[in-house]
Picture 1 (cartoon, chains in turn brown, blue):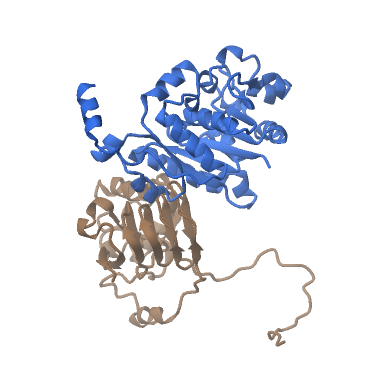
Picture 2 (cartoon, one colour):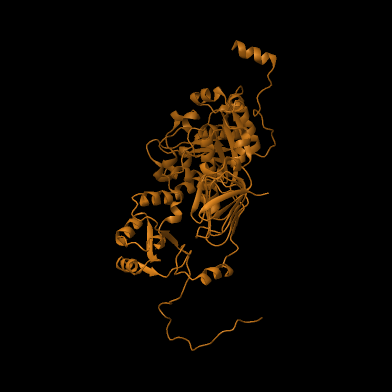
Length: 248
Length: 271
């Protein structure tokens, strides 16, 4: 048996009390388009209400790319308002020096531009963006559920795809980082790409879902074309909009 | 081998207690030794429907909390041999049900009885959890309407995740659908869900379909399990369900409208 190469060192006299490591996390980012709009928080609250468990205590980055040129808002008050919605603001992204100063005084980290490139944002290097899809994200085999998912039950698959081989009832919730496949009727709610992956899709044998969502973009049952109800479909995200199409 | 069966539904008023009483009495009529327990602490109904409310001295809660022996609280039915009722308290609430106490009573009943039927309260609170926690099988009572079907679906999820069998990783609880108040005329007019519609959503085997029958109400007012009334079609359907429960193969009856014969038509006109 081949053993992995190791480097032997003298044993530490005592174990270190901590380890400082780099890690990669996918975070929610809240992009401010019109921060002064009085409807911002009511609308945000409505959005959260669709899947409170997903958003509860979720770390959030405030992305100010669309308003980077205007004067910074009262970030301290804004962050307090987010905390009231049980979001945890952790940092600011895509701001100029004035925004960055405001972020520091509000106790927020200043992050380098990243995540999804903001349109017209010169600070994102194109080669980085192009390079990203070729780096496969570490994904497990995901989760396969063979039993019916009943109303009130929640199935969460934090890595990879979620496959259900049985009906998903009204009031049930499926949450997956990757795709969601349902080999049966999908009557509950499905959240694919829950970590923000817009390439995730939802496939089901019989679309009767109360709500489908990909990377936070959602569609409620009422807004689904009635001709697609009960059909075998695929749901995908196409530039901030969900599309549904039949699958042969 | 003793079986503990919970009769549950989520929604109230669908016929849980009526069904628990009918199935317990039916099993006893098949020669089994049966005890039926009322878990609806504070709103006791089972002893009323079984017609034993005037014989209640001690109850389930006294056995759990007050050191009363089980056979002091068990009430023997005078009509059917082998049928016993464990009534609940009118004055206490669901907090009086401790998991350890319920377990002790159920384990003791398992020694003596072929079947222990747990009549669950409505809702998904403590009383309902306690009624289902120790069960080996579940009878989910559903009416042919959307809200009842949704609540039954929710209860099926709880049976699969919150019961002792689920928590211990034992084989899952056997689940049966009992569709009650099935009104053929209203189903035919599309005012009620069809059996097939309910099955499509719940996807569990059918134990029985109980037709709408006015005699059910009359029997419960008289304190008599409906299986004791031979004229009742609901009673006959419950007996069919009992036969299926003990493993017999019985075809479903009362699920299609009776043939419209001239005599029936005449009877309807004169009625």
